[in-house]
Amino acid sequence: MTMTDLDIAASAELAARLIPEEELRPRSVDDVTRLPSFAGKLEESERLTGIPYSESSLDLQNALVFRRLQQLVGIALLNPLWRERLHYFGIRNAPADMSEWERIPLSDKIVQRDMFMGARAGMVVPLDRGGFEVVASGGTGDGMPLEIVYSLRELRDTYRISGAFMGAYQLDRYLHGPAPRWLFTTLADYQMWSSGTMVGGVLSHVPGVNYIGAGPVSAPVLEHMFSYPGHKALMGITAGIALLPELGAGLSPQARASFRVAMYGSGSLPQRKRDELQAFFPNVSILSYFAATQAECVGLQLDHTSPELSAVPGLHLVEIVDEHGRAVAEGEEGELVVTRLHADETPLLRLKLGDRMIRRPALDGPGLRTEQFEFAGRTADVLHLSDSQYSATLAYAALRGRLRSATGIDLDLVAHEIQFHNHREDRTLTLLVAVDDAEGTAAAVEQALGQSGTRRLFTQALPSSLSLFNDREANAAAIEQTGYGFRLVFVPPSSPQIERTTVGKTPLVRDRG
Image (spheres, rainbow, N blue to C red):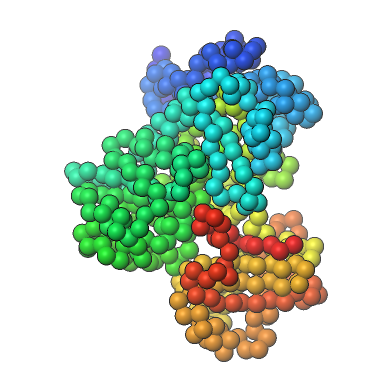
């Protein structure tokens, strides 16, 4: 049978054929270990339709993913801890539609810790059967350890799927020519971290490239790596990518010209750093690689001119949801929630990753068809002033715009890093900005704004950063009544006043309670 675009009914019929009733609700742990892999179902779909799964109709993708979600719920119900959790929320059977799926409670890092650390009671197939890998998070905000467990078999499937996707739809357009192609990563001080194992696993499965898991590199090591002939791509944490011009100061013009793709980890790269990268490496394109401990490849930026991230079809269910766990409309912002589709033995349903995303229209061919979304900030990127909540991302954008109008200084162009410090007890909100000439910039801003200019800057900018749910409750006068003081502080690059995580990430907001 050869099909191109299937309608909804035909798609559901094919999905039911690919995952038949006898596999939908396994009766025992032994049954789970004997289930055909979901990766095999994707390959069978390709064989039956005659086209790559990533280019299948969205109706078919949605039907097969939903059939898989029904199966995952059936599998999870075999586990006593999952069964108790799902029964509490009225989930006793596989969902009949996506509306019922959205009744499944969202999981968070606490649920992940309870399920997969200590006794690891959330595993459907017990750990003592072997064949698993434990992966740790290296960048948790609360400083507490966080682990997840994967079936090695299913992990290898996801590496192969996502690596092939990266090659076909992302890197092939940037790495071309007859010379060897190189893909480096500077992630992870030690390999138990998700960044070292999982992202490295994906990158090592990109077809047609030579992969090097370099780990943290010094300037001489970078110079040695970049001496290899051929086009190069490098993936690292945002701070590591930002440092490449400094690390590469000794590179030859030929080596600089061979650098084609800089991929930064979850989050955003300041405009100042983008400009420096592109000035130093004349042919580089900058792309986002969005990953998390439970999801080795959540979304990839396929086009450097467009901020949208694309999901890898068949890898995860990516949901952007409101405060009730329901899908937001296109163009709306919500919480990023991920369910790993290759997780028979270690299911984790509807995990909140701690990020905010804007749902964008899906790519619908010709060629690739998949869901798209755009990074909007960390969930914790909220400024709490008395009873009002302000988006730190929007607050920065408003402050930047007003400061540029008043002084001619564009923070996006001069800042290496920025960070809000909210001292709730002292009622002081500070925006720290790392710049090359901290004293000179501070003097120029003070002269332009005047004695009370900083306070006026904040009180006028903050109302435009209120959330959708309380955008009428505050104005400049109301902000004055909070009793807050406001500071704009310029510091040198790498200043210890800007707080960083143990892996060098710079949170946008530090909240002091």
